[in-house]
Image 1 (cartoon, rainbow, N blue to C red):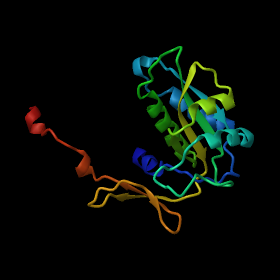
Image 2: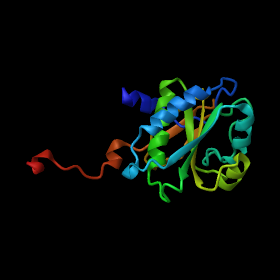
Image 3: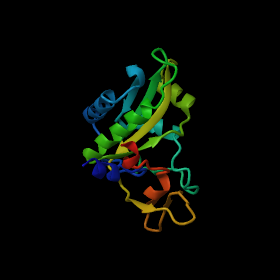
Length: 197
């Protein structure tokens, strides 16, 4: 069921770093992105893949992790991602990428969950530095980085309290809590089917 995959598809930020993700798996995940919807069917997205520890180590310092956790600088050695997918826009195809990269990222992560993996979509990136260290040509604009691996943390969804606070947090056991708004709070209007007749 799609809902089960969505519920399992959390933003995981700690991984079993020693359990690798092979490149064949990354190719299979990119194929899900390739088959995704694209504005005007331009398909301007391209992907840089990393599943090697040395290359992963080059990528890691250029990412910011969990902005609400002010006392946490990201996963420590042994809990870092086993792989990365860097989603870029090819500016020779289009100068604007709309929501293509969001659609592609979600489909990749749903595919990862189906394979027993997890990941995190990262938008807080030192883009120029990462482009330089990986020798990414100027025509490619870094849009998102997906961190992937076998999750090493528990993420629990809960309903926002009366104060409406949506900031995620970790308890003393390291469980990551993520408040979600109630369905009643996000549906603003409902047209009655009787009015449509």
